[in-house]
Image 1 (spheres, rainbow, N blue to C red):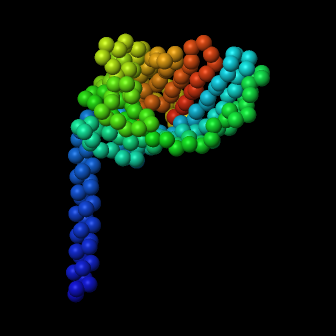
Image 2: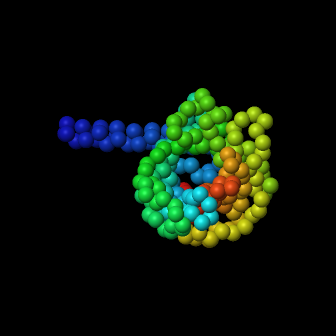
Image 3: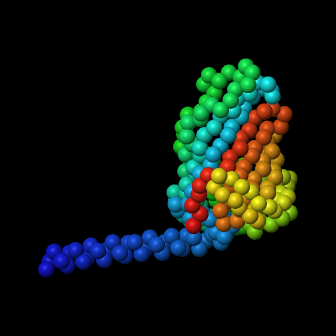
Length: 231
């Protein structure tokens, strides 16, 4: 009888703990109102096929490929902000093509695992790399999205006062990538730090296609969504 009561007590404790964790997660998600736009929940992931190119001129250039998977590992309320921790895993690069005299030796990058954070500040989603520092959200973050997003939405990719508006939704359309064909998606254009950025953003999923090009030199990358989980 004592063993039975002990077992029942353990089961009750486990049940109460699980309920408490679920309630905590629900309360955390309650601070983020834009899951219909960009779902930020634990377990969601986005796997991309990435092509990277680098060179000195159009005749001396290297192209490499790798896979990148970004997974949300935790969400929490910290200092009043909703914070999603994202683990980004990249496979080792493989060589696709070399033109001219580009020095390939040591140019291919090894597999890496890095962490970045998506920070919800009101209706904005900010991105911070390297280290989470909520006391410095001006110089150390990029403004990824401002919700709700629609045609002609515009904002600054810099999180600084009086920063120029350098990100804009210029069209709505369909996009086909290895993960499938998506309709009613938004095409975003932006310029920052000598780079031009293009994204196809699909509501309820996230970025399904991305392209970045440096001004003046053949340097950049393109990624396409291969698979995802966006519950």
